[in-house]
Length: 73
Image (cartoon, rainbow, N blue to C red; front, side):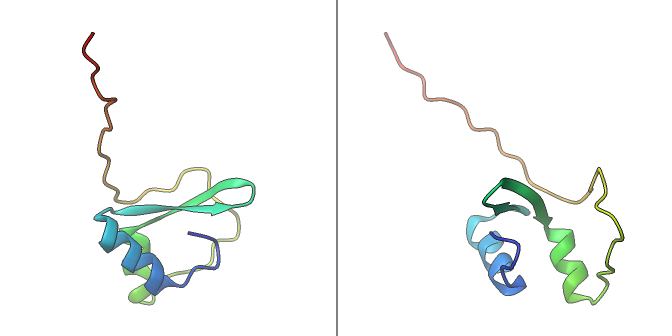
């Protein structure tokens, strides 16, 4: 997702991928993370602009380990 991606598209991508967070990418790489809490806050009209980017952003997310395939010798 890019910084200008509409909220409806972000929410649809999260549902389709069955994840609770998606990265926000720009040409420079990772610039943020949109969580399920962020989507709910936006829908509820509770998004307030932050004067400065915070160093740590909390939220809900779902982590799944990805293990390399085992190769038998």
